Length: 48
Image 1 (cartoon, rainbow, N blue to C red):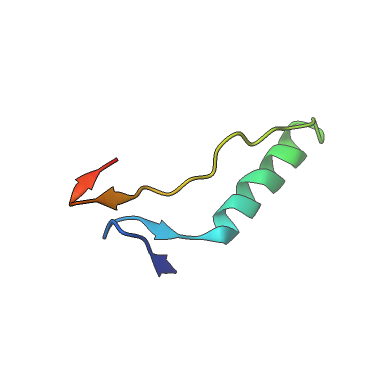
Image 2: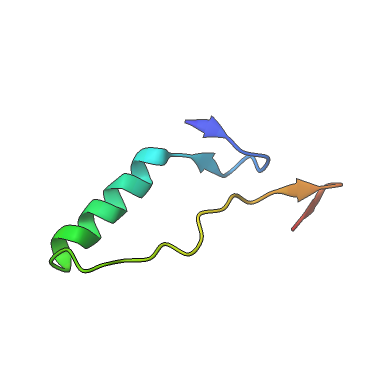
């Protein structure tokens, strides 16, 4: 897993695939729109 700018948050692309596949199976392949897939970023030591 890759670290982000916050020490307790990690990149885990397989997690996105798992949740998308779960929703596909659970909700009978209903069309889904992913509106955000962002990272927590810091600037000057302050969370934004």
